[in-house]
Image (cartoon, rainbow over all chains, first blue to last red; front, side, top):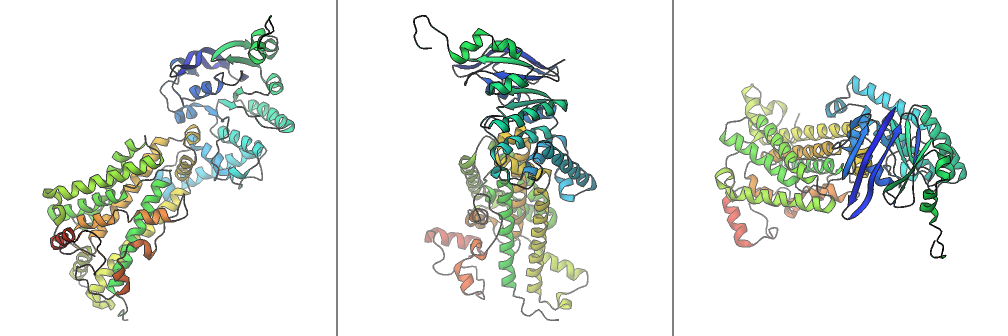
Length: 259
Length: 304
């Protein structure tokens, strides 16, 4: 079943066309990969799907519903969570508070309930806390609940950001380079976690440059280059696709010019 | 039991400190979402003028005038807060500072409503009203060992102290809740907050109007303890509320108040028993002599 579908999505910044008529869809329960060289428009596409940028054209349907004109927080509530390429945690909050913020869309207490500390509010805070600690443990961050997020090791920050996104109970999780800057063992850990998140019933769309991770974890890949989709298929198909090889490695020219 | 040591003047100074504590909190609340609003003196003047006009011209009781005045300030906070969403950092500070300036000019020139620089005369004083109410109920301050002027100052001081305690409790609880986490998240990273499911527009405007509402309250008290003209006071209070908010540990200072923040005229500290003759001590008025004299004559009861 299709969870997310993009049709002819375009985005231009002035004269620069960052995303150009891209169409693809993500099915429920799969792990889809979005790859392409730097500047191909992958993150822009994420920003369009989470409604941070309005698309210049085309439609984004999430569970059959157009997300056009929705605010990002509303998109989160509808069930799309994301992380950022350059980690964006709340640095002076503790790890626990960061995840509790992620729970915002799934809780309700307003000013008066908060100030009067009603029974409903306290019960809700208790549930938020429970869920938060559960998620931290799930992401392998048990014991770090009280550490300030900004002071945690880099790999932990990446995982904390995923925990925060999961706190909103997304149906679709967008991961923007979750393994960037990680060593081999940390990357293996991310690999394991991505599969574990899928096992929770969350569909994943992943941007990643680490090809060994992408090829082993993704069910399907979409390749972008200069804002256009140049290929789509299983990792095996993509691996042998001449256009993809050209995008990444350049074209062999007969006269031996610049590759 | 005697309270001979209870000096009404000291209580008044204490009241002004509490007023400034409230203003400090009002700046801090807005700042909790990362918005530096320098327009709180403006919101304070809305609260002050509204309640002064309601009591003198429309026969409202003082408590209801205070409530209406601060609600009015809160509503104007929403009105200012919405366009302010488009501004960040120092530009927001400039715009809100400008808003306060505009209000000041409006109040000084809208003579039919505010009396201009002359101000509003015969504003009922809260302390005296309380005294009258107590006496009407068959009590007398002497029953508690207080002189009338002690009782007046003490009642204002205690009311303000209660308001301060309530405000601090309110925001302590708010900040340690879902709403407070949203405020902090917005302050630290607005985009990340928005993608975490926080309606940043709602919370930013909410914080803005809470700050405005809170600064509208002491506006009335600032008029009440002494009576007199809110307009001229506002002129001098312009940068006052900033100080408690800004002097603390930047960039997210906790509200605090110290006598130095109070803008107490030097002579008041040097000579606390100086009778309040309504004239500034020599050398404390740095504005142009001609205008200052006019203002003094006009307002009659200028504090300093």
